Every structure is written in structure tokens, then in C-alpha cells.
Image (cartoon, rainbow, N blue to C red):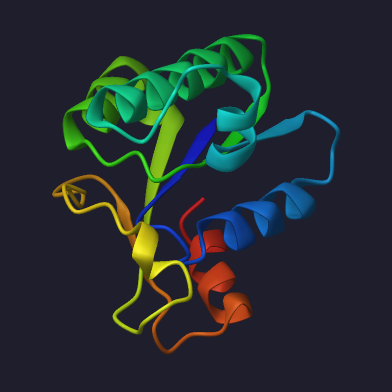
Length: 144
């Protein structure tokens, strides 16, 4: 299964994804984080094309690991709905998209992605505005 956490920077994707990896605690679950992935690739910037390339790399890795029988947890801004929808279409019931968002200001809001497109269908909505990470994580567990 692929668990895809998307949303703006600093809204809680990595914290919640890390909790999910620890929850599985089986050695057969891999976490792909956007910041870590970007550190492994070269010449990828924060332009539209750079973001598309970064998400595409994460999707290819996640798809490969999934085909090898692993659980994959991805925490990545992944701003373009069409990219996320293409992956969901190809994987059908083998992917869950979690939209992590908040209305409160966060420390990394200066990195906000202006052209981010929130999901419209077939996703789990996790609003971290009032919930603690533990409360948000309970909502995630209810949907896996």
C-alpha cells in the first residue's frame, strides 16, 4: 500500500508520516520525504518543472517499492493535482491520499507553494489546525 501525505510546507506531513512508519514497525515500510528526496537528486529546484520532477521521482520510487511488496509512506508537498491523480488512477485501491492542512500560520509559510492544488476527490482530509499530532494520527489510523 502507498500512503501519500500532501499539503503545504510545515502543515504536519512529515510528523504524521513518521508516526505511521513507526506504527507499522515491520522493516518492510519505507518513508520517502520530499526534503530528503530533494537532497538525493541534483539540479532540481523549486520551479514548476523542478517540483514536477521531484514528485515524479517520488512516484517512481514509491511504485517500485510497492510492486516489491513494501508499504510506502510519502510526505511531499506534491502541488499538482494531475500528478497525484495519475498515480491514484494507476494504483486504484492501493493508495490512500492524505491531505494535511491547517489555517494557522506556521514557521515555514514563507515557503508556501502558491499554485498548490488541494485534492478534490478520493482523499482523507486531516486538518491539523486544532488537533494535536496524536489526534490527527488517530484519524489516519481510522482510514487505513
